[in-house]
Image (tube, rainbow, N blue to C red; front, side):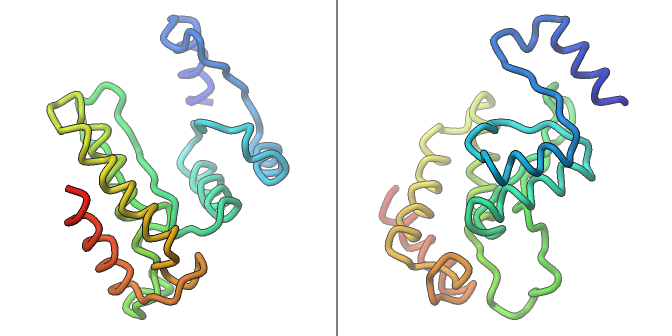
Length: 165
């Protein structure tokens, strides 16, 4: 398929020197992600399989509400997209129960992506630290052991952002 051809071209061009590349079918990757999640670092997949695998990886690590995602244009000619793995979560929209942390972590990923263009490197670290601090204090939504609503969890992160600057 197309992405297999892109992978072969990248490897043969030397762009992926030093990167271990393993091709897997999505069913085998899913099984290994459950059995050995630590064996994965970066997954490159088509949109359909990538969506399945990112949702699975988020569930394996604790919650869809913690997983940021990025669809990157490595050439940087066109915009890249940063969003929570769960997307807009239409099934819980308006109920004040969604975990906002993946949105914050997606923003941190975007800021890291923008660093070569002049974004201060500290900005992404501060956001990540604010979310980590909330999790450590269980100031979070029920999906990760807390008791806060979406609005309350968002406020907890924002409060920490003000103190970490």
